[in-house]
Amino acid sequence: MTGLVIENERGSWILPEPPRPAGRYQEVTRSGRLLATSGHGPGAEPGVPQRGVVGADVSLEDGRVAAASTMLAVLASLHDELGSLDEIAQVMHVQVFVRCAADFERHPAVADAASEVLVGVLGAVRGAHSRTAVGVGSLPFGIPVEIHLTAMTR
Image (cartoon, rainbow, N blue to C red; front, side):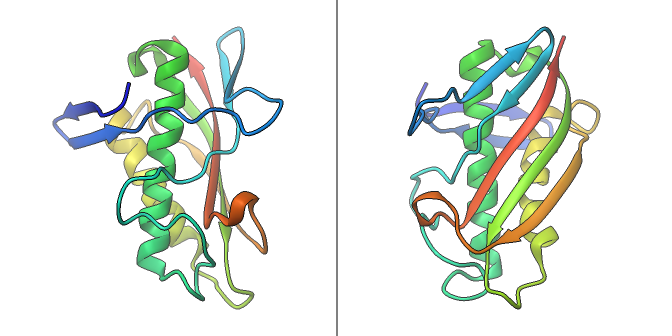
C-alpha cells in the first residue's frame, strides 16, 4: 500500500506503508463496530523528525510535522485493517503524546496538526473527535510524537 493517495475537496495526502507491530500486539483491534489503534509514531518520509524532544532539539513546527506524519501512519493502519477509510463512520477520541521539554506548554498546537490531517482526510463530520494532548518525558525509540485513536465503523 506504499504511496496510497487520498484526494478530496479538502486536499491530498499520501498514506505510508502501514507500520508493523514492534512487539506482541496488534496495530488495530476490533470489537463489533469499535476500532482501537495501538500507539503509532511518525512515518519515515524525508523531513519528518524520527527522534527528539519538542521544545528542545525539535522545534514546534517540526513537532507538528511529526504529528501530521503520525496521523497518516494511523490512517494507513486503519486502511490496512478495513480495506477502505470509507468504512469509518466516526472517529471518537484521539490521544496525542508529545515527548517534550519540561517547560514546553504548546501540546495542543502539536496535536492540532494531527487533528487537521484527520479532519482533512475524513471530513468535518466523520473526522470530528474528542482529544487528549499530553507531554511526556520519554516515548518508545525516542520518537517525538505518539498517537492512538478509537473510532466506529459503519
